[in-house]
Image 1 (cartoon, chains in turn purple, blue):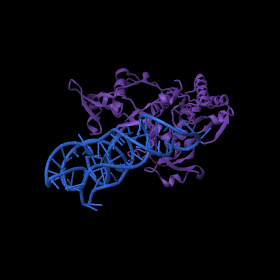
Image 2 (cartoon, chains in turn brown, yellow; image 1 turned 120 degrees about the vertical axis):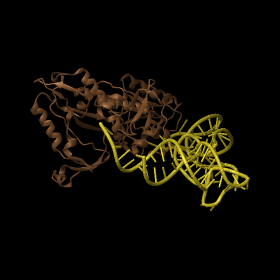
Image 3 (tube, chains in turn red, green; image 1 turned 90 degrees about the horizontal axis):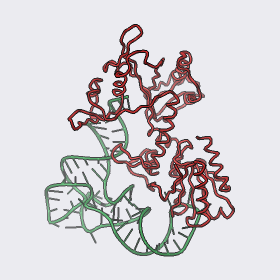
Image 4 (cartoon, protein in one colour; image 1 turned 135 degrees about the horizontal axis):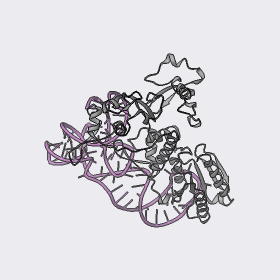
Length: 373
RNA sequence: CGGGCUAUAGCGCAGUCUGGUAGCGCGUCCGUCUGGGGGGCGGGAGGUCGCAGGUUCAAGUCCUGCUAGCCCGACCA
């Protein structure tokens, strides 16, 4: 997508804190014009928020595919009959939205997809030969949004950098070992005694946000819904099942929780909605306007999506908006600097500024993002 | 589903106790001076006070019922 002029964009920022938002990430998303609440727990993603959401989704998707996932899509509107088979139609209470279609058939708004995938599976997979050769499921407790106690080495794991041969039992076992032996608990399951066994240098206590989980179902769904395969010796067994997921929108919130200050969001380069912001300090000044246009086009030519604040606003208002929405880099353009042939490149994270020629600024931005494809 | 809190202009709030002309800040619109961190001055628009009943000469304010939102819990992938 091309760079965007703020005067033509839709960015409804709020100067004051909405009263209903208590959590800092929620507050900042509302203030930065990323989301709009439509009902309890139901939000519209406004342009700025949508860009970040899609960006994170894309990263997660790419990594999942790299790890061997095969994407597919299942309906949210689901027939009640499948849920009756698994027994969950009655287990769920008012939490589940139940509806009837025009033929008076019972339908539901599926909060999850186990019944769907089990039905797909049982329709098309009959033999053990059709199954992938997975050796083990890893089961992690959900972390919740709470205090967490963990061994430092848990977060030091660098999974993306390694190649694993899933047919090699020893290799897989080694990874499992890495996951399952290190201590990592929420306050609900925390054991002070065991935690004290962790080397003191690695002992960490902090706030945790659940952004994903892994569940092991066993044969809960396969048995009740008849998802079986024929084994080597001709027998019939229900398949072992499990699931895992990443909450993309929650991940977005977690990033803000971890990366903000009192002025607003600070986007990491990898997920920022725009690579940089261009602030024209004196809209209508011939030199400033021309310099901004030049930057805007030069960055666009290099495929760098930036946001040009070309509004008729005071400098202070433009700075405040940029700080709030959190673009990691800002190019400030004004008559004063241009008289010396320079613009200012400012890091949102450190607040440090550096004066340089417009060409040098473009080169720097390009260089910075070469490291964040 | 339980417990607590809230509802007044687009947003943030006062006014409710003690009933009597609908207020403030921000935003917005017009004009003007400005122009390197949410600017100054002048002028304007904008509200069936969440909804429905009731008490009263009179209800934003008192009473009853409802609805919506927020927080905590329960539930859950």
